[in-house]
Image (cartoon, rainbow, N blue to C red):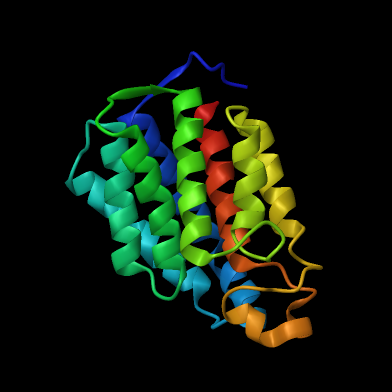
Amino acid sequence: MAGQTTERDAAFVAAWLTASADAVRAEADRLTELDSAIGDADHGNNMRRGFTAVVAGLEKERQEATGGVLLLAGRTLVSTVGGASGPLFGTLLRRAGKALGEAERVTDAELKEALEAGVDAVAQLGGAALGDKTMLDALLPAVAELPDYAAAARAAEAGAKATIPLRAHKGRASYLGERSVGHEDPGAASAALLLGALFQVSR
């Protein structure tokens, strides 16, 4: 577990997003399979395209500020990921980036606060809450565990799996009613990949 006095720079944030891209790329087929059951069967491909563009953008436009990295990544996701996932994941990163601002180094506690702000913005945008079978089911328990990155990754994974028996109340999956029960939410699964990547780079 990283202590609260540990400082993280823009390179750390960029490494997190690169690790996230690797994880999304590796799991894209599984994400699409999950989405085929309760969505448009395009989530994995959309997320892979978006995070590939994020990595390319960060290589092209190096950012010195921690917030700048997240703002660039968020804008890229909004513009390259189709469906609801682009705006939602983009909002998560953009709002967190806005919270970090121009700081070149931030503490783990400050990163936690920024991600909490990002998750709150996602909840406002989507109108969802814990238990609605969305990405928030992974994100909310995860940010509560920060700055313990290992615990946050475990909480996100558990939260994603916990969506399986839930009935969807938001998004396209909600149109299925009871038929949405028995399937893991792909957005929550993607969110868990991001938290797993954050733990990976924090070690």
